[in-house]
Length: 160
Image 1 (cartoon, rainbow, N blue to C red):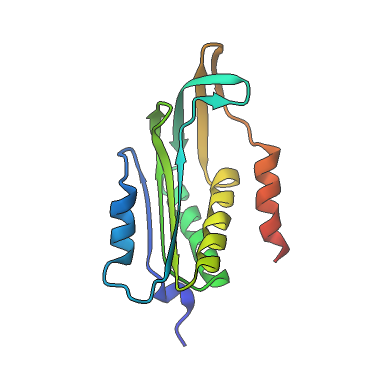
Image 2 (tube, rainbow, N blue to C red):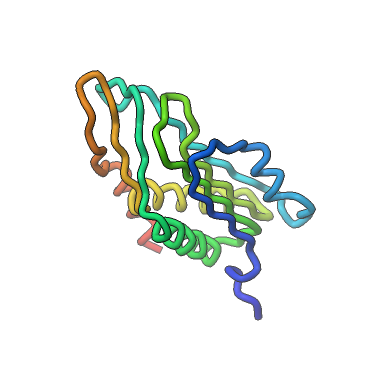
């Protein structure tokens, strides 16, 4: 019997260049009649972080390790839900408010699996992926600390 991980296409990219969401969905679903749902999550650099106005955000990563860790979590999502495809694109570099940062696509025959897997992957990316964020604002520049609300969201997946 073929494992679900072996039969599910996965694309993981870490890049400086922007991505085109529609193009990425088209690539994921091209010639696939077994996909009935695609869930997309796109993370965008926002201008406000609680009380501070963000002028820019710089994202750094641990090359090689970041891709491996994202792949490991994509494989876990595939083992938990009946997925037909996964795409994760995470940008690195300096971003201005409104710039795309991350894209997660999950495809399945049915919407529930695609929604849950996308949420699982984003919770992982927000809490454990080897990326570091530095915010620039009128009051200075500083590294972004982990948020308790993100840890709480990720903790729900360890219950299963």
